[in-house]
Image 1: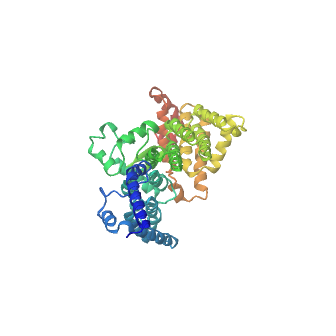
Image 2 (image 1 turned 90 degrees about the vertical axis):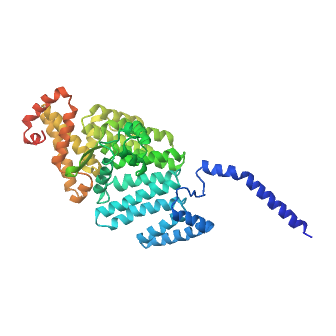
Image 3 (image 1 turned 135 degrees about the vertical axis):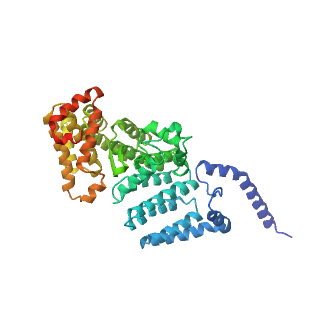
Length: 463
């Protein structure tokens, strides 16, 4: 005869099973809504993922944890290739383990790529890191904002920055990849659904033309041959699923940084025939950049870092606008600055603020800003020379030469300034001349060119 305790335990167990069954459906819905689902969908999964999921079952997590501990030890021993293999196994065992996807992609794009002296080999490993997140990691974790940001970071930092000696190769290769799909800075969105080339945007590069067009309307026009634009795309995608936590702040921060970079270097002059690549400021998108910053600050009012970034942007924008002779716009930036940050109003006038800022810029110009200031001052030189203002024209030309000389004579080596995106000064002159010409209305261009004639051979070569 069964004891009363056994019967009670049996009834309690059945009651627990009944209760679990009642809440099972609602629990799954809760997980999906909050992106906390742990079950791995086998739809469109690789055969290896299907095999490990079915054959190993619940032991996958234990094995993945052991492999992850081994990866940590290998990292301390700097064994990056072994780390890559183990990380690949962990992503097959636990596709929802997003930390491993981010680590694995970072390891390939950063640690492994620099082991190769051949820049083409480096580019292949950088692309491997991109593909891992874009084609696999986000397939299993489409609502994880951190993975979108990690993908954007490779574009923003590894390709967009200049710390890697091969960064100009990465930039040119990215631009060539995009040139194979569309002509000019962006696709013809009206033809996106019919042009066979543009199908590769979505199938191969996972760039949705509808989202690209929406981003262009809200933040652009942007040049989709540039790495900052791709980082904007993935940060934007991350914001759509981030909610309001730390992940949203990180995506907003990336969006702000890359919009500022598009202002500094968002106008691409590209000539594949002679391997010429020069990114100069896109002054026209500044209102969109400012809006991006103020919107992010409104969404995260307690984040002091965002307000500091906005302060730096206003200072930098004022200097760049002044360099391009956009004096009224530069004054507007200065007024915004002292209104938003009263502690900076110790400089009494706009002119004194600019003199102080220009002195700092000439003495301490970050390499990322050198192109903007050199081209801007050369544009002013040509504009004023064509209008007969020889004294001020010469002053702006001297400023451009001063920054150029400071960059070359600083501790930066020849290799380093090339890595910063600088091209020979005569190439900078030609681009500045074309930009100055465009600043004049068509009816006034002939008179302006005539005014340049007395300036001699320095201008004649550009004409």
